[in-house]
Amino acid sequence: MKSRRFQGAAVLWLLAISLLLAGCQRSEPLPFKLTDISGHMPALDFKLTDDQGKAVSGADYRGKVVLLYFGYTHCPDVCPLTLAQLHVVMQRLGTLADGARILFVSVDPTRDTPAVLHAYVNAFDPRAVGLTGDPRVIEALVKRYRSAFTREPASSDGNYEVSHSSAIYIFDRGGNARVLSTPTDTQDDLVHDLHLLLSTGTSS
Amino acid sequence: MKPRRLSSMFAGMALAGLLLSGGVHATSAEHIRASHAWIRVLPGNLPAGAYVTLENDSDQPAALSSASSTAYAEVMLHQSSNEGGVSRMAMLHSLAIPAHGKVLLEPASYHLMLMKAAATVKPGDTVRLNLKFADGSTLATDFVARPANAVDDSH
Image 1 (tube, rainbow over the protein chains, first blue to last red):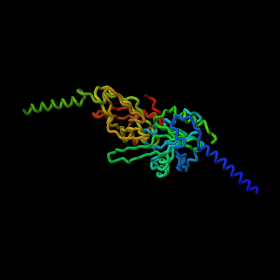
Image 2 (image 1 turned 90 degrees about the vertical axis):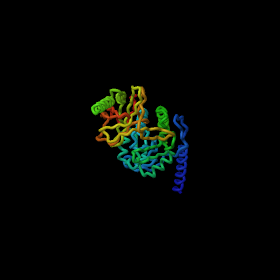
Image 3 (image 1 turned 45 degrees about the horizontal axis):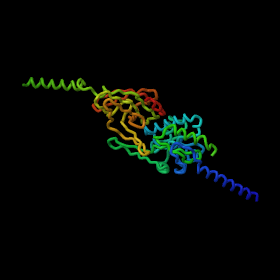
Image 4 (image 1 turned 90 degrees about the horizontal axis):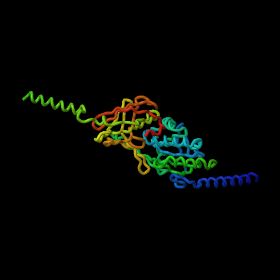
């Protein structure tokens, strides 16, 4: 009898927790300056390998504001520029930046081993994490965020073209997609929105 | 007849020599001024991007056709662009520098991709690149190596 009452209490607690979580999922509206994607993009969810060689999932980054960016290390111009700009953004956020993680997902997992990614992301910012994994898993993740990439091999005359999504997907501490940052957005707007996300909902 | 033909041949050779020496028409390299030359150095042997501002003080347009360096086995002229949320990188065969104008090789735009470094290039190092123009003239330019997370604020 005692155990049944305990079970009942446990069920109530589970209910209460799931209701709280559901509230979290709906995510309170915030006065964002970037493109608000709340409720329009799936939550942060993946199974990849980080730059330390450890298996990680989206759930491992709950509690952190996540900046998700798809790129590859053999990209000499736009990828480093984006990461260098994100480093400046992190510096502008001061100590608040410790609550954020830049997740750099490689769309070139064959060449981007954890070791290559480790040296790469650390050259930009201590809060940047490199993620690699099975090419099909990465492809599925890219599709999940309606992003795209193509990487054509070099032809005989050395001509080739590489293209990939230039957007940065930003998730709140609960793993919910909140805003999208594109190269045409200003750095001030990015700092503004990250400030909003980092200074609210710390306990969720 | 024979000596006359010989003398006209010499005259022709002299004229060709004059043209080649630039006495009649100056080369592109003589009219191009390179500034803000820097390289974003990435860890390991990853390709690096090189940037420079090229100003042409001539009343003739010029064109950058390629570049080479003893520090890198391969140098390619590229253009990055962003359309519809997709970032693209494409090879260029030539980049025009308008008469009395300039062209900026800068992040997210035109750049030189440096590949296969002969030795590790560290931030603070100076790397010499030979910029080659469409008329075949070259301009030796020193590029300053900067850290991966450098943001171009030199303009």
